[in-house]
Image 1 (cartoon, rainbow, N blue to C red):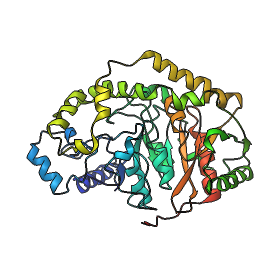
Image 2: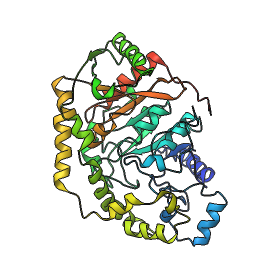
Image 3: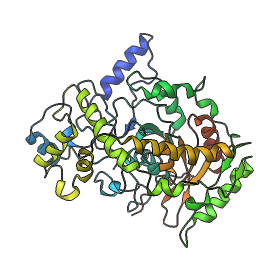
Image 4: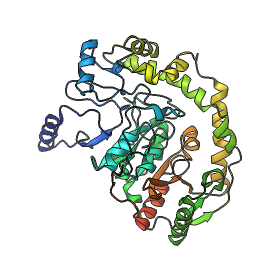
Length: 427
């Protein structure tokens, strides 16, 4: 399911936008009409923040009685609850808001931002916004056959986004991606990270890099292990070898059989999970304190709310272990943060710089953690469909600020292949 709530004021906002245009004042985005948003993004209507904030009843912007919650829930005004909306480990498999992949309904839509990708894949919207901490844009994009951009950390503002990790959180686009990216990048005084990243924004914007010949001269790296280790009978080896041929035909230089020296540590014992737990607690507490009105002000309040209304929040079915683990933390371990920075510097960054690569090419979203811990950008593009009809993507990842090159590469590949097809909604 892609939509759990709609803006109650779209016609009023459209009328206001029309009046502004007639008066000679044009917004860069006219009220972002028709743009799907992930639940972690606060969306303001004329009267208030929309009722379900972040998928948990505890995040209503205004006080409501438990009767109000029950009535909304029973009448399907709140179609589901999403206690843990962020992507950590295997938690996305427990997420009750996921209702299937529009290509194969029984297949996973992948991750907690899947609603954003599903909405576009099912033609409910032309564009959508999601947030990624580790995979929540790239994974749903690849498995729902849409284009997804995970920008460089800080290129887009996170103000108003329910936080997990300021070190990794980024807002990105799905489909018609570059058009939207041009609109949402830029400095925002409410998010200090945008001050540093705004230097990466090219004069004239990103649309100029939609170049059908963008592959020419690009150096693309291929790390076979572990990214191209497919199971027996998979169609993916043959498909990706064909894609490599397409990339070469487009003028790209493929640098094959590369290795990321510390990749086992990155995927096995980086400490990312522990860091995210601690950052989530401190960041969420700060976010809640800034709300104008809220029944909860800390993570501890959210946990208490869930316990008090355990039936409504389905605690027996889904629990809140991650919330409890995060609440038990006492600040961020600086050694862990230094380790994550060192892993990025001595791994992905070193590989890219030593081989003068413009992008690393990987199947699906397997590279997501490497990009996440370093704040690096990536673009997922539809790459094919398996024997059951489930989509899969190809990802181009690069160093910070490399969006212009990644857009050229991804767009050129997309134009050369034109793989995406409408969803079939198979059982």
